[in-house]
Image (cartoon, rainbow, N blue to C red; front, side, top):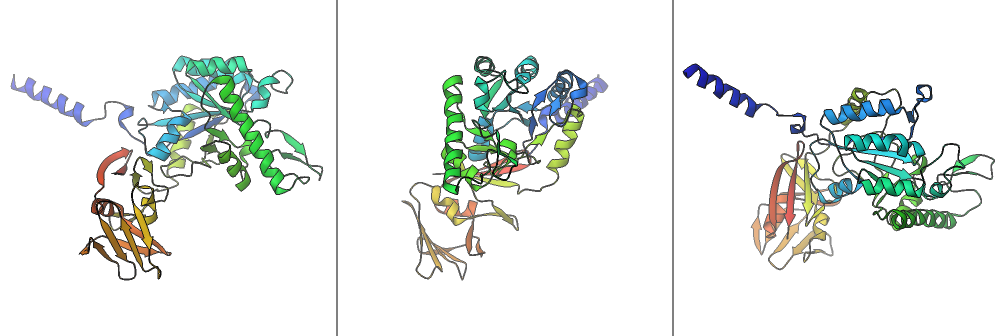
Length: 393
């Protein structure tokens, strides 16, 4: 009897000590896959074309490995608000809007209950049959969106077209042409991106917040036009994974070629994830992720003092000589003498870590927040190995 009880104890202990499933491992990055075309003929497999059979194997493998698909809305809330994502999040994107997306990819994703985002060239929705490769129409797009499996976002209205430039070369429609000045270039981009967003929302009833740059090309004018026309997330074709704090206006993706297996995709994801070592502590201030990247020094996490300007009721004043900074709210007044690294709270000297680097004043985010009377929550293992300091009014 004693041996039986000991055996049962060991079983219970081992079950509690070991991961119950792949989902108990939490990765600290978000991979974004990029697809284009699907074709049943294996001889047509390429860097942008995958057979339905291969696509199903890839998706089945990733699902079995514990990956859970998210939407661009999920990613946006994560990057800007620090919202929770699944333990192993995965964003699947498909560019252009070919009919094969509807014919092959959509049924497979629906069968596996996995979500994907299609970045559609909007003008092609009404010219579906007169193209080199047919595209799905508005009715098919609506069916996919209504299923909850597919989200359709923008790949521009017509900027994916190539134009004959004055030099006799074809250039993407997102590049400035020789016959237009910079203001005309900006206006053309803005009108195109706005038309794409408005039409998608009118025809499909979904909220459009993201776009994939045509050909991955992006300059200052393109990002400005996209932001002014209502986009909050923008996707490139640069290969990498996404970490908290990454710029939402130029997010990387991982292209999936036709010869990749599911195991190849996972190996590529893991290889890319090891190329960077981001900070392991992030900050959410009054519900919004801090835009500036924190600095971790001697075990203390610092943020530029200007990051806290988004707190309601907080006033930051810089002295005439720029050697003194005053911070006040309804509860407290804090004075920092930058040159001497002295800090006074309501007239009394306190120990609050701070330093100046490249003319920017950094303060210990946690110590500063607590000194000013804000609520500070420490959330360990918020995203994989990353932790979160949550500061609220």
